[in-house]
Length: 279
Length: 251
Picture (cartoon, rainbow over the protein chains, first blue to last red):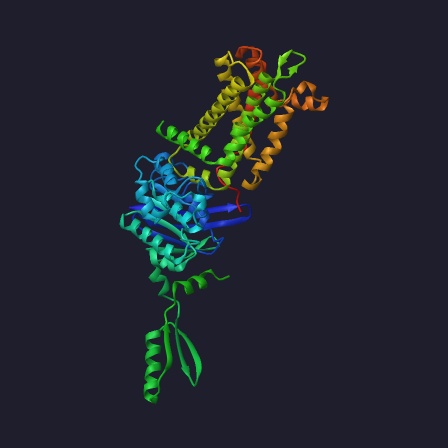
């Protein structure tokens, strides 16, 4: 089953073409990552899917409905975590979750959600006294409290310390285990690599690459081989690392030498990303 | 209905939890009543030969509608809009109309409690009789709350930032409260202030309130004032439909 279908989506603000004809689909139960630098069109795309913005052209279907026309029954099925924190400063974490749980017909238990996002110890603390990372975890909790099928997470772990990020990743993995569909936008490549089944890289409003994180790092991009000869670092790039490495080691063995400091570097998603998003 | 009740309760929790807002919108009219009532509650308004205390009581209810339904609501909604809370609420199954109605009803509840307190203070401290037209009073309170809430929502479209919301709203509502004669009789004001007062909705709401509380009029006897208040309410509604936004300003 397909949760999200996007065909030929376009959005223009004045002279700026924020989204210039993109296509992608997200299957139910999949974690889909939308990667890209600031201004690439990630948030515009997500907000069109959430029903906040009207598209200029193209077809969009989210859980079988057009978000521009969808009503309350559709909103029962989606959870939204906006890019910036959006909370009531004077409520406690638990009260905030209760308030939002009350908007849904079949919400999750707010106390369970408090635990899920790791705020049990802070549940009776006013939001204004929580740290930025704790507030983001509450934002995540509120996106989940309605027990939605499809969850939009717009840069969910920005500003988290490494421990909190790991907790959030665990929460998102649990969502996947529950069969939920997740659309995640992120700057962080390790996050996409850790969580996403598939990623699309956006740049200037077009998708420049799409596939599994592991597929993106394979393929056409060159592998780097480093070693030292006469104290000098040699860096070679090759599309055929197995053969080149064999040649190098064979030569070294024939000469009875050691290839000092030998390293083979498979490009990380980060390298691909930088290459794809570079001007 | 379940959603509506849930949201009214949420709004009540949010209002009373926010001490600063509760002070400025709810307690300030009560404090002003205590202060001004003590200063000149026993003096006589010369033209009508009535004590100033009941006159001031009606004026403070007028000030109350301006502070709770107009200023308080406008500031709250701008802060929620700019903080992304309204945007988040739009993504939930809560229908926008249910939300706005619940906010309005919650505002009215606050204003009613305030009015009850003002009347009680008038009775206990300043020997003002309890209003003898309770039905007319209630209808007038509801009309005032709706009209000023519409104006408050209309004003939000003209306020750009959460930081600026108190400044802009106070700039509009404090002079309005003074010029409209909620504290003093506008009849003693200089001509240019009276000219301004003659177009302000709060002037007519306060006038109707004094007719009902001080002069024991029925609601239908103050239809002229009510028509002007409602006319302003329609202007507010048009401004709200044109300018009210659920999303913060784009960075």
